Image 1 (spheres, rainbow, N blue to C red):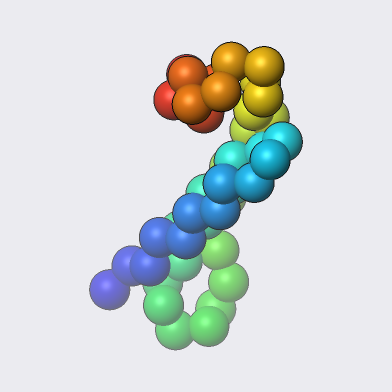
Image 2: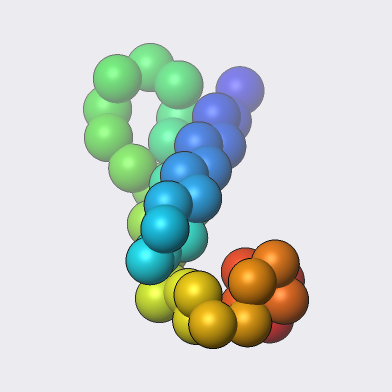
Length: 44
């Protein structure tokens, strides 16, 4: 089983995928958000 964690903050978007057994991340991605674009800054 895999677990997906998503955090949307005011200036960044973070995604992490783990095995769900406490062994750590399989993959991790961090992106900056253009807050001037509002929701479109998150979606692009």
